[in-house]
Image (cartoon, rainbow, N blue to C red; front, side, top):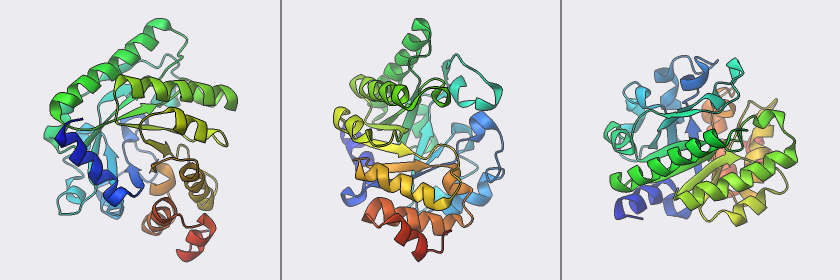
Length: 271
């Protein structure tokens, strides 16, 4: 890892603490979800995050939160995949590049992210998706910026928890061996610690779909961290919270300080 990569990655885990990442790139796949309609109006409420995941085209629209000393790191997504456009029932999990790591860095990125789906049902598509990660890793080394590999199983909502766990476990090891610096993936439950142990880079657990109660999302974060995750990436569960800033503070307490999720919820008035 180059000096630039080391410095940028250390900023995410400030003083060795776990990281809280806010994700606001959902419009890239799903259009204007509730709460995500006007990013410029919500982004400044996310200043408590260690990083904010954005799409490359929104960098100029949300620059205000990054334009100060001590601001969150900018994390930019590099590729687009059909597996995320869930509203259209796509099933092939095809991936295409959007920007290079160098182009993302020119936009202001401190960290970049590449998504990968595996076990798509097509050997050719699986190979293409792995090649996408490999290219992005090569580019990030030249740009001197750390990269997150997002492991997103094809059709993950339609497979059993056991198969989901297995595919995620294999996918995490694949992207790590391809050279990513971090992994972002789903929390798989009681066996998630097995994935953490077999993946030689830090893992960030994603929040996925909006949970019924905000306390459920805090409990998910707590369970992931107890299993060894080095942080979380929350989008809908954060942005669509009744009070985004209060939920952010509770999430930081749970992820960074190990506060019990029920105590954090009580502390910040979260139902």
